[in-house]
Length: 421
Image 1 (cartoon, rainbow, N blue to C red):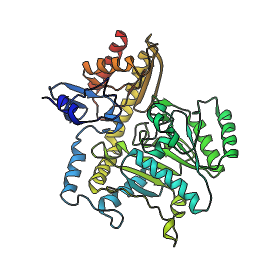
Image 2 (image 1 turned 90 degrees about the horizontal axis):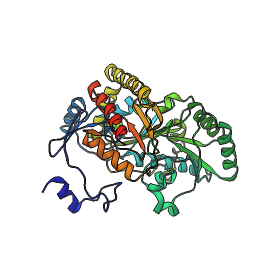
Image 3 (image 1 turned 30 degrees about the vertical axis):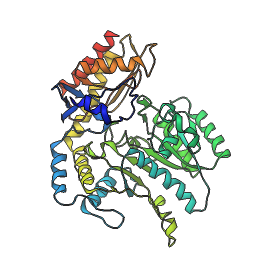
Image 4 (image 1 turned 30 degrees about the horizontal axis):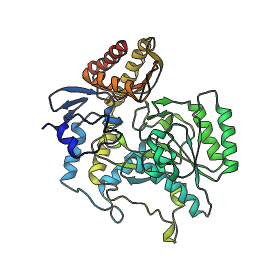
């Protein structure tokens, strides 16, 4: 039996309806931007395997650093010990994060980085003897699959069966450049009727919603409102972080900086799982007390795993290198050129871009999460390109090491598939 057949016997895949989509393709090798299946077929990974492998799969620099670390220290509990990779990573992260971030809390993945942030916000007020239990979040946001992260997410396709068990979250529209005053009025009404602990948001780009881009000035006004009303702000940079928007973090575009930032995905260059929640000195200080109960009692067994820290250190080295920064600019320019011709295609409804993130919406009556998405995915894979549409939204988020030839193949494949619809 091949991998696909063996897989079907025992494995339950995420985000998949196994009755209608029972098979999963067996991938046996990945290098750079190329995925290779068990039959030797190759595919350009044009979405960096869910925005993680931004420096390419099995990047030699990252794997060499991790290999060296594996010979020195593999795992150590982090509640009582520290180690060189954790300390070095904290120093490197603080150097590139927004200037108000001073403390690093380690966790396991994107969802748990958000979960920790939500618990920080709730306990921040609890420690101050203030009861604040309600959060604000954008409509159609996505923050993960653990319960706090689910509650702040606004996509019912993920959360439907669990909505009766989630904490109270009030939703507001994303700013589009014209609705600032309406949003601020809504916020004023919300805070008058609720005890708000925090505002959780994806800064400037909503990933799972279809790479929807919102207005920078409008977001800044919302953050200023929160700051003026003593509402903690939590930026979910799990998707947007580490160069994808053209800057190290999407929050770098916004004048008002968040109190807490959530990180994962490209943090380790996609090599191993890890998440981080960073915060300001004000947040950290609220947990300092002679009362042990005011400490932050949240922990993961693999917090600050030395191997994951080594991968993250190497990833930051690459991100801040002249070569990768130049590549980011070149991909961004290539997207702009592609957009000039594809936006005129009769099947294209809207387009948008920020840094290496590019998305287009197809003008069609076919159902968003049904036959169209499946048709697009199969067509792209048949052409040797891995693009995973979000319903009728096609997006590109390629590794920074993608070649011009590979990127052009991604573009031409999209055009040919649109022509065939």
